[in-house]
Length: 470
Image (cartoon, rainbow, N blue to C red; front, side, top):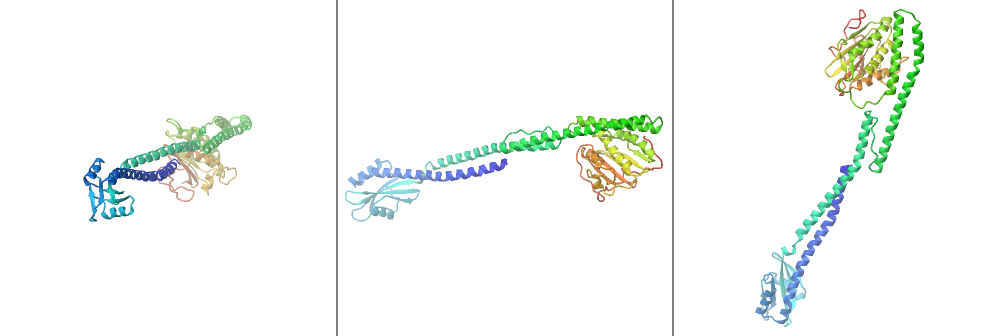
């Protein structure tokens, strides 16, 4: 918009300058010509009184010399014997032009070498007509025209530059609010809910800024309401949890009772965490700094320790690989734990008892890959499973578990892929980018699955017996 205004202003001002400067320049040239010939007419009129009194050559030469223009003036007096004209001074005009002026009896101009000649007829005392010739050089006709044209050109250029500068300032005044509106929209899209736009500029942009700020306020209010709703819903779970805890306390001693009580305590902690997170949640406006994140290996070991008890009860063989050394990732500990619980919960929920599963952690230079595999029937439509709210199509599935995993991976610039595992079931591959840059999508082997690569990501361990944590 800014450059469009500058171009329009430049075109309009240039047209105006040309429309006025060109006619004015022509007028200046005509005025210079009229001034030169007016001077020539005055010089010719100064000689006319002498011609009306005498035609003596010597006297006329003195009159011409006294006028101070003897080099540019000539007097043509007809000879009495009809042999021609008696010329006093240098003749420049043609004889035919002189004869025509004498015949017509009025002044005329003719073009001569180096300029023009003014021919003025004068009546003599004898009744004959003499012609006074005054030479007007071309330099005198154009005297001052070049300077006047230069001044006009300078004024025109100054007007054009001034109009461009004014148009540029107006363009900045109009474009700057629009740029601020764009920046505010980007910031709001990045999660900076405090982004607001100054309500200034032209009326239309000011109204747009008011609407944007109102929208941002509504977004903040809606998010606050959702957090409160999540906290309230989570708080409602405390009543059935209290009943479960009391019932678990009456189970007595034994491994099953201890596992039940531990699970209830863990569920209570998770509900409390949800309530605190929902009420204290703030939009993340910056990337995680040095030292932020968690140890993925430690989280994997912790969650597998939780799910291993249920796996032993159901006769499931399980395995953990790659979690024997620290693996730092730019993800909060609670978020990774929630993603692992969602995937492992899907394994227990959607596969039969006795189905084996495994969790692998692979640490690369720029990414960390977490694989959750099982030996179940697999997922017939991976894209449908990844769609939020659709689930796998079985009872009790909402599809939000995989969405939690997807949002976790995308927060680092990575992604989630669903494919077939070497165990014969489903493999969910979580790609966590370490540098926060989005990577190019990899090639797929077929619709909804990932082409497997040879290398350390391949699960080849035996499932002859359950293995404990390292």
